[in-house]
Length: 342
Image (cartoon, rainbow, N blue to C red; front, side, top):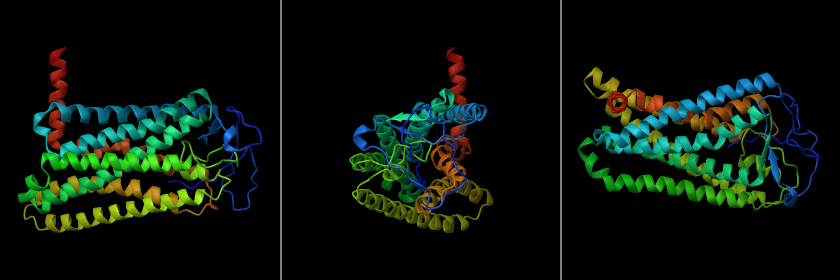
């Protein structure tokens, strides 16, 4: 979650250009505007006002999005097609790829369109949908990352009990719990946020709709209720992070006892990428959430937003899968089979 300041306009136009100071303090002037009943759209923070840089952003994000579609699409298709990959680890990986596609499809296409058409506007309903789906995918993905750390813990530390603890029914139940957690959490936060009266403008200090940015526009003390829900979600997230760390402490202790150097290398290669993505996802989001509202630097804020909302879905296929020889072999078999069918 991000805590960037907002910018207010007395008159709103979707093509209105705005320049942002590098950093602003707590005494920045804030203008009032109409209440939420008259707000039909929000204005998002552009990456740049220069047309050439907007087109550069368009091509960069388009490349990242296509790479994410290709990587995650290949993983989903390969795991569904190859019977040898119908195991708990690959079942969770398939679910992760689905959530990655949902997460990046929620924010990047609209940002690409805004850069291409030189606009900043997003409708009220579109903003609500973006908040819901991003919160849903992010929460479900984090829950699934926690489950995947448990999967690796059982596989390495309790291999004899792997089939019992992670049977097909248990895997389906755990995946369903992750998706249901994301749905319920997103529904709760979205409904609570968009029930608040808004009277401090319609400009959001982020390139996509975020709950903290919308709360800054509220003119009611009811926003404290949503802040409380966000804090509660952060505490739950911290509990999941502690679970992941404890799981990997046990994993590393078990791996270091493996006598074969090749065996240790293989075990580490499946664990370290997971930890890297989890650290990136949690670290940037936590820093953004805990940063004081009085500190506002648009460029670093946008970079961190890209790191936790755009980069993980694009690189997850590489760090989780392309290092896996079994999956790579299955991908090449699928590609070869597709060419033979043609």
